[in-house]
Image (cartoon, rainbow, N blue to C red; front, side, top):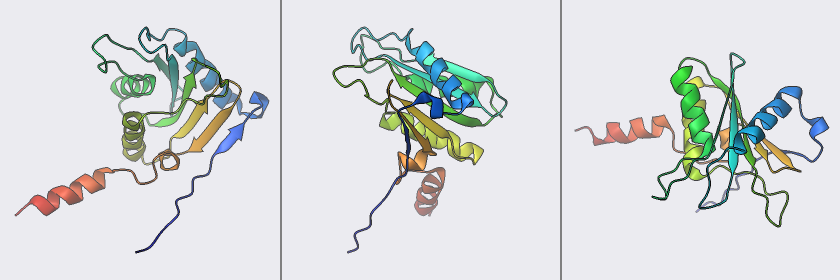
Length: 168
């Protein structure tokens, strides 16, 4: 048996003046989108903004439903909207903002497993890392690609290898 250590590197900002203008704009769009989140059950309001390679910014927020968990996260709504309206344009970055600060003001927005897998899919589709900006209000974390958040992720090639093993 071997024990291996997986290390992820992130950039943490407590001063928004340190962010690039483009990153800060994306965070502001994400925060603005979160204001309109429909979260009457959890009270957990999240906004997301996606920057496309052509400069377009698409934003969205989480949408809950009484038939929980049939709602959808802000990240997936923004990504799916971008992919359906700009199908051949790569995603450069995504900002995710948590507007539901409790006791801990610096509660960083963290994508759920489903959202991480969707980010992974679109990163693989374009072949370029998606810059992931996680906004907690007074602290922002930036990850350079999904492998930072999902290091042992399931990829399309894994599915292809599995299917080829099934062919007799």
